[in-house]
Image (cartoon, rainbow, N blue to C red; front, side, top):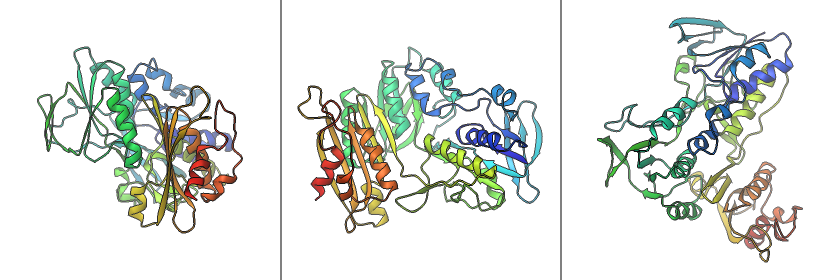
Length: 439
């Protein structure tokens, strides 16, 4: 069986390893546009801040390992430019020698990931801005973060924007975040995101809201309201799936280019699978395909795609959009839907919010914990939640993610047997406190 995988990072190599383990006769070819395989993209901001000493620490397996130990034809600088589903051939360009290539397949996995969005602002060039998605992006940023760089402007306040703000702050730079919306961290509701904004300002990070960038000229960022000096500019406004080269194949995609897959990670064309940041992710609360590109999902989808390609049936159960971010002294976590998303969907809901402590209130180092639950107005079924505090937020959201997976109601949270000891929790866990308040 000839397996071809386009993309050599999280989803692609998770799939490749499952095929190796489950098909002794497999012939596996991986086509990677870059030169680095299987690395932890989520660690890149911490390399910038010096918490991780080099990008080398992020590489899980080098390309030579896949070749020599696992017998995979792992190619670098091979960019796939088209797929012919009728003849089952992938064509592209080998950037090592500039020559075209063709690779036939019996089963194909598209794991091409996503690329940072770069709006067409006046004056934008590849030289005067930075994005952080790959190791080469990060190396270039580190090279440009010289001592003479004093003022850094970050455009966009999602996961990467906030993590970069914290880590570049560690380098003693002046940071300004520009966000066109009315809040930072749109994965949280405004009342919860306000806690993150206060944390930014407490650490000297300037947050500029409700301003849209219009031009980047002469070392300045110009918005619809002001002009800001910028010795270095980072753009972090989202990503788009790397699927433009597939438009002529007839593969079904969402409007943003994400490849629609079923629970076996199969596309609309037989023999072709997709996984990771280029594919859709079934949302267990919305009960429909969504696009939530996260590293955990890419690894999980890749593994399941590889198993199915090798004939070992396994289904992808879906995601709730569970995520967590460290931002200075705070841990902020969320899962499920926000109020903004619920209002768009028309689902009737209620909320229950509390400010409590992350352990027994009388314990010496108990810290504040803010927690918010969202649940169906009529049935009580849990729809989402958010938690922010110095510690303990991720534990509560992970429990809530499991509750969402099992379609539990807010009342059923009270029935859970959760651990208790004064140094780590109150006798009623914050989740259960919020559930009781809802009643």
